[in-house]
Image (cartoon, rainbow, N blue to C red; front, side):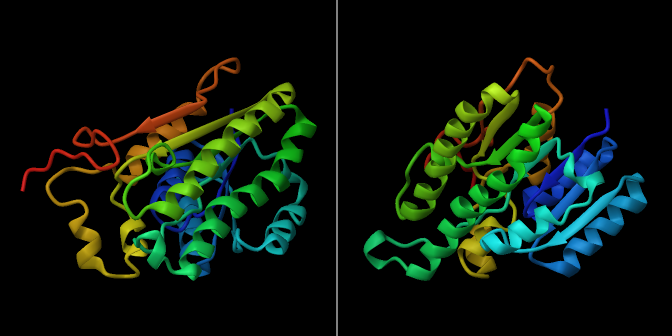
Length: 253
C-alpha cells in the first residue's frame, strides 16, 4: 500500500537516506529542512528517479509558528500522513558542563526536544482523526548512556526516549504506533556539525572501525514500518559491530 511519509531534516544524513529508501519502495513523501536548495534538489531527484509524489517544505522545526504554518497549510492530499519520522536533530560542541556554550545548549534543546514535540503536536491529531499512523523518533545511543562532555546532548536524547514512551502510552488507544530508533556511531554530518566545521577532528572520530552509514539506519527505519498492523517495535538500538557502548570501540589503527 502506498503511504505518505513525512521526514524532518531530510536534506542530509539519516533524513536524506530515509527519504530515498521510502521513495525506492514507491511511497509519497513530505520532506522538510532548512536548506531550500538541497531540499528542492532532493525532491526533484526522487520524483524523476522513482516517479513518486514529493512535497518539499522549507522550515525550521525550532520555530513553532513555522511548524504550525507548514502543517496547517497542507492540502487534503497531503494531510493523510501515515508515518512521521522525527529525524531533525544535532549535537553542537563537546565541552564539560562548566565550560558549556549556552548557545550550543539552546540549539540542541530547541531542535532535538522542542522541534520534535512541535512536530508530534501538529501531526498526531491528523493520525488520531484517522485512527492510524506511525511516529518514528530518531533518538541516539546518547539517550541510553551518558558519556564525558555529552551532558546536554545526552540530556536532549534522554528526553526523546522519555517523550517516545509517553507518546506511546497516550496514543495507544488511537491505534497509533510509536517507535524510537537509537543509532550509535554513524558517519554522517553529525560530527562535522558537532565540531563546527572542523572536518579533520570530525573524521578522526571514525578512524579504525567501520561506523554505521545513513543507509544502515534508513533500512531499519523502513523495516519497522513494514511489520503487520498488530506488531510495533517500541525501541531499537543499533550500533556498529565494532562498538560495544557509547565509549567502547574495537579500533584497528
